[in-house]
Figure 1: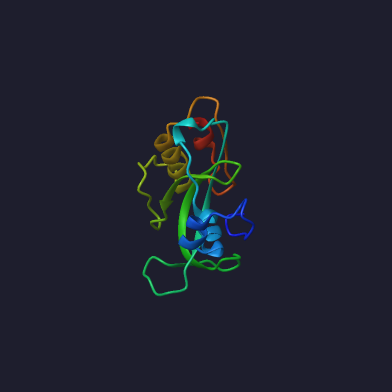
Figure 2 (figure 1 turned 90 degrees about the vertical axis):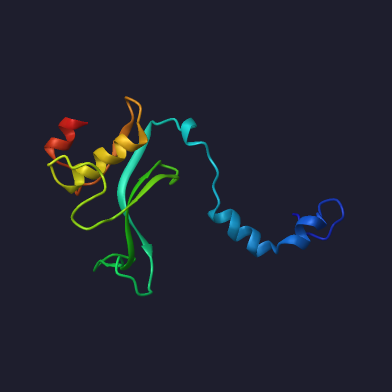
Length: 138
């Protein structure tokens, strides 16, 4: 409404400072929240790809995925898709402490430890991460 011309809603300082489309784009990607206030009830751990088509040694190609080229990341997010932590994929090893039970276990336990989740938090992850040792550790 800041950009409408009616005098009761028009705000010239905003309308002259930034165009509406640019403002909408900024608001689309800007999210401000207090991580210490998260309820910690549900959390999803998964991999994600940030699309990238340029040349870079860390770029991944994954056949059969909707986004085939880009940077692979380990993501911890809540059901509203708010991302709490992103960790870059580093090949067969991770930057998390090694548990000796595989990469999936290292990622889940590393993200769980980094986020300092409260007891009772429900973690969701797919079969890539699932193992008997991980379920025992959790």
